Length: 359
Ligand SMILES: O=P(O)(O)O[C@@H]1C[C@H](O)[C@@H](CO)O1
Ligand SMILES: Nc1nc2[nH]cnc2c(=O)[nH]1
Image 1 (tube, protein in one colour):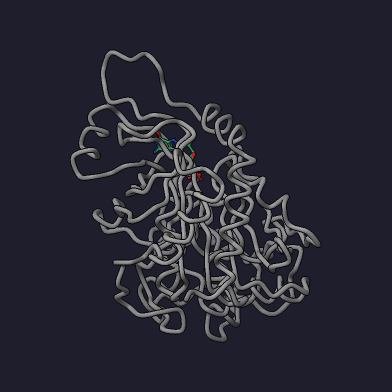
Image 2 (cartoon, rainbow, N blue to C red):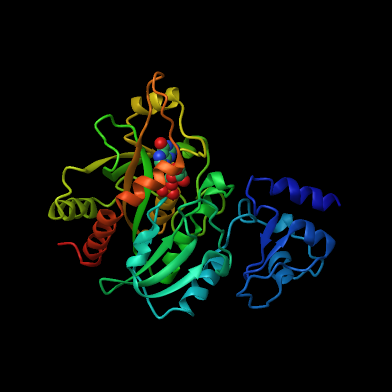
């Protein structure tokens, strides 16, 4: 019982899966189950190898050996666990994409452009979290966009759903192990820059990692050098050349009047911001406010992927006390839906640009 109590404290992270430890073979087991000697919770793709052997170094007791674990490692997916998710997908699709796409709230329609598609609900992919937010279908769609192999996350994971940042971003590592080298990320965001309008598209030039200020990061904990270095640089996170090309693409599409460039901040959500919070963010140079993306960019840059990202401005941030309007998710989804055709065409052309080598 002592050991059970210790485990419960060690894993008390706010993660809904925190009481489930991963077996390294696609199985998760509740710590409560472990203590009771109960059965593992199988995923549809289970391979059937021994959980206890992996987690307890050969012990058949069912208890995790805390003494032998490296700080951070016991709660993060190891390289092998990520590899298992990647192998699951590689074994079930003939596509070999080098470009990945992550779709923001209401922007998942991009995945519908793919032809020759293989579709994997997140619940079927070993070790994957599940999407819980409206506007995030929760499927990995792998196929071709203008004949270019692409893998597209139709729905992402957010910290406010209860997932730790590393888990929100784990699909990026899965993509990396499948061969993805370039990532197109989209999100819905509130426009804080007073010159921005609803429906504008902001190419992300830089971000402010607010969670990082408070000591949280998707890279917090054990660092596996096979993914990347302990201390990755984060300047030029948003590839200069891809930003330049995206602007050219937007001009070709006659979107220059709605294309902006700026700094994105991710806050934890799920609340939208108070007026005082927004005033503070304005002072520090934020142009658009959201609840995602930064953890994905950090993990992608850590493993040396090229990143391009844009925000659809779905609402104007309210920075005065007189306005009665209130930000709401229905409006966010509605605006995303209205801007669907331009955004999908822009994304298609950016993928083509990403697929050609820069001069
Ligand atoms: O997944 P994204 O960042 O596009 O979604 C934004 C942030 C919240 O999840 C939601 C709020 O309306 O939209
Ligand atoms: N944090 C935050 N996220 C958003 N996503 C879409 N609009 C907003 C917003 O105003 N604030």
